[in-house]
Length: 307
Image (cartoon, rainbow, N blue to C red; front, top):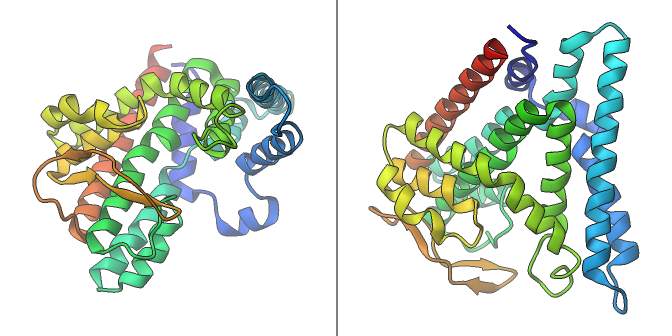
């Protein structure tokens, strides 16, 4: 059996997550990546310059430097005699099983006690849409959609790239995903500068999104028909896969019209059945999410045993 780095990293993440006291003292590695992107975007994303070219240069610098830091950090822990355990500790912040669960659960808790304002505040921490006027169903849909999509971005994809490319692969992926979240938008300001970040994120998530969708259906015991029918209704080539899988498993409709900064985006519906999701559906989604994460543990264990 090879060194179980991925399995150990998953275990550390579930055990401790990324505690608030640790974040208060040292921040998070993704925050450092975001600051570098912010500096480069502030200097290079301006009128009168070749924005698309400079966006390509930005993503190249960010990904290459992040991967290099990961290589050097990995060598450092081996030189210190920490071996694969040290590498697992370095990989741990790149996974977000516990953090995602802890962000979504309060939404279900608030809705369950009828506190819609608290539910809106909780869901506003994990979605980019307007939340101030969402009704109970809108809040529930937003939470479930975020859980489904973030299962790919926050767990399945980083784990995939950890297994494929080791520590540098995981952190290169996190750099790509962070860049996409910050600059990979379609608004005029970022359309050209963030083009490379968005396209590279699409490539990096292509396989993990489909694996994640299959795992959600396996964990939930169904949802296949909705997955195959609706996965491509999403604007993203990847985001619709895990979202359609979760909609199929739960028997609810997700997506649909949603507001961003006061502007309604007329998104197509994904899924079928009752249009009004509620707190019980969020709790069901969390159970399915836990099962899908457990399947990732199995994959990580098999990968370690087989290599």
